[in-house]
Length: 247
Length: 242
Image (cartoon, rainbow over all chains, first blue to last red):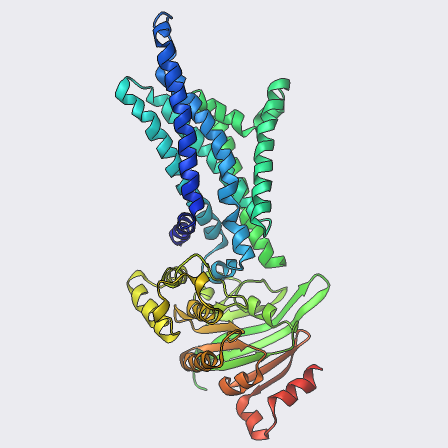
C-alpha cells in the first residue's frame, strides 16, 4: 500500500514542471560551486605540495559543495513539501485516501518516502558530480560517504517538518512560508549557539550536519536527526487522526 | 429471510456526532441489505453528509457503531473500508491526472489485485461511459464527466456498499438518466445509499426512503408502501421538514 502512495506522490511531483525546474536549478547552483572550488584548488595546488600533511582534494572541493547543498535543499524543501497534504485538503482529495483501506500511517509514510525518493535523486546527482573528481586523482571516499549520509539525514528532517506543517493548513503557500520560517529559525539558533556555547547547540540542524560535513559520523547527531524525523512523522499521523476524531 | 445476517451489508447503531455543543447527527440507525437502494433525503444541514462521512470512516462518531459486512468499522477500519465505495459531495479528483491514471490509482488503493486491474478499469469505464476520455486530463473534462469519474472511482473495486453523495449534480438530463440506470444496475448486486435533493430521482431509483431532519431520522419507509398509499414523497417531505 505504501508503494502505491509513493508512486502516486512521485507521479504528481513529476507531472508538474516544478520538480524538473528545481532539479535543474539545484544542479546548476551546485555545479557552479563545484567548478569555483575546483578552480581554487588548481590555483593553490602547487603551494599545497610544500605543506606537510596538506588537505586533500575531497576536503577542498567536496566538503563545501555539500555545505552549500544543505542550504540549497533547506530552501527547496518548503516548495516541495507544501502541497503534500495542504493541497489535498484544499482540493478535497484527501477523502479518496482516507476512504480507501489504507491506514493513516501508510498515507503519511508514503508521502514522506515519496519526497525522500526525489531528494535521493538530487543527492545521487551531487555524489556523481563529486565522484567525477576520481578521473583526476585519488579521493577520500570515507569523507564523501559521511557527507552523503549527513545530507540524507538532514533532508529527511526537513521533509518530516515540512510534511507536518503542511498537515496543519489548507493553504500550500502558508505551509511553505511556515516551513521556511521554522527551518531558518533552526539555522539561526546555530548562530546564537556558536556565540554563547549554550544548550542551543543541540537543537541546531545545521550544527549537527556540520559533524558529518567534517567527516565525523556522530552518534548523537545521527540520533538527533532520526528522532527529529520520527517525531514530526508521528505528529503528522496524530494530526490527521485527530481531524477524523474531532473534525 | 433465511440468511438474514449474510444479506445484511451495512448496519449502523445509535450513531451520534457532536461538533462541540452542536449535535449534528443524533441516534442514527440503519440496516441495509444486499440489493437495496436507499434514498437519504433531507434539507440542507440536516446531517446527511456528516452521516455519510461517518459510514465511510472519514469521521469518527461520538458514539455508536458501524458494521460493514459484519466487520466493525472502528475496530478493523481497513478490512471494513475495503467493502465500501464512496463518492463525496465534492468528487476527490486529481485534476493533473488522466482518467486512466486516476482510476488505476483508485483501484490500487482499494486493493484490486494486479492481474485484475486492466479488466476492472475497462469494465468501469464502459459502465460509466468514459471510454472516449481514457487519456484526457480530468481537469479538462466537463463537470458531468468529472462526476462520472467520481462514480467510477467509487465502484471500480466492486464494493458491497456504495455510498453516493449527490451523484447527479451538474449533469444534463440525458446523463442523469444514464446515471440513474447505472445506480439501479449497481443496486442489484450491492447496497447503495443515495443522498440527494431531487425527489423524482428517489421515486425513480430507490427501494426505500429515509428523511433526515435536524440530525434525526423522521421518516423511514419502503417505496412500495408509499406507492400503495398513493402519497407523494414531496408532500411527506414538506410536511416533515418545515
